[in-house]
Amino acid sequence: MASYLIAESGSTKTDWCLLRPRTKPVYFKTQGINPFLQSREDIAAMLQAELPWDAKKHVPDSIAYYGAGASSAEKQSIVAAALKAHFGVAKVKVHSDLLAAAQALCGDKKGIVCILGTGSSSGYYNGKKISEQKPSLGYLAGDEGSGNYMGRRILQYYAYGTFDAELKTGFEMRYGNDINAIISKLYSDPFPNRYLASFAPMLVDMRGHYMAENIIEDCINDFFHNIILKYRQSWNLPLFFTGSIAHAFRDVIANLCNQYELELGKVEKSPMEGLVAFYKKQL
Image (cartoon, rainbow, N blue to C red; front, side):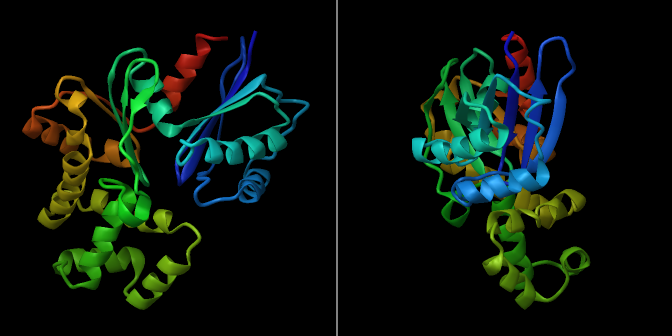
């Protein structure tokens, strides 16, 4: 009977699950992996530091990895090489994080699959594969509705003096009042997308404040307007969402679906449990 090491990775964190017959799943967590921002060597160093592996004790038959930035063959090969070397497993399949969301949330049903986490992405799932996907422009030019997209708006509102006294104080209590230091960190941080997304939890804490609510709705509406409505299938198929931002603001997503007369399917914080169920059927 086959055993699997399943990985579901965003830009901020990776959830791991070792799935073997007749034993309970074993879960791990590490930092996120993104081959657009990390080399094979960077990924290998992170794994060695955060997930030491006893190859004699834990030897899965194969690794099923799903991750952000892993939609092209070139980027998939970077991740696969690092995983093969670290875990000593020859059979490694690398997929996009969208396929993880689709398999976990849709199963064999059709739908529009959306990820709103540190970054954002979407695709049309035909019940077997992602058959249509809008290009992702990443944290520099896209990622509408994501944590880093909201973080950018928060930083702008603070720096430009748009926040009222309550939100200004709330920002400074969390992140300090040295805007030059914040900007310096933003442009020197090896993961600026993560750093921008680190401002987004402020919106969770400040729910109910009109300006926080406006930022949340405006950012997620940008995702609907620029991305979701461009899928012709969105008018007759349900939308499925996963990711920390989607889960935190699922009420806003539901309201926007009502406004646009779209059907909302599941909203899950993580697709991992759905992936585990998907692979348990293959044990």
